[in-house]
Image (cartoon, rainbow, N blue to C red):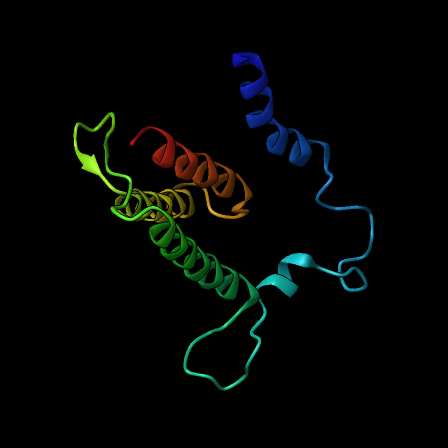
Amino acid sequence: MRRVVYALLMLPSLALAQGWSSVDAPAEAAFSWAKWWTEPIFSGFWMAWTRATLAVFLFIFSAIAAMMLLEFRRPGGNARTGILGLETTRGDRLFIGLLGSSYIFFAWLGLVGEPVYVPLGIAAFWMAFCFWKV
């Protein structure tokens, strides 16, 4: 099991080492997903709304909506004591997961830079860990 986890963690670096990020197409003629993902949706707006920022906000709002539906289904927040030794509810675990994910992204951008696909995977594992063990 440990070998599978290590192999999955190494896949992005192997893809970049093989040169799969550039496919011998001229840079001007090729469609760039990175540019499409980060170009502004609205021009002249006070905030730089890109598809990436829209996806982040949609994820946060959908997570809050899911928490609301779970609260209607099982009131009380499903409190439990995790590895931190604190009694946490679903909302606490969501907050800890989102806060830790933002720290993961900030640390990655400060230390490594782009691309941010690897910290996205790490943040997904962190969120799963928070809801599983914290």
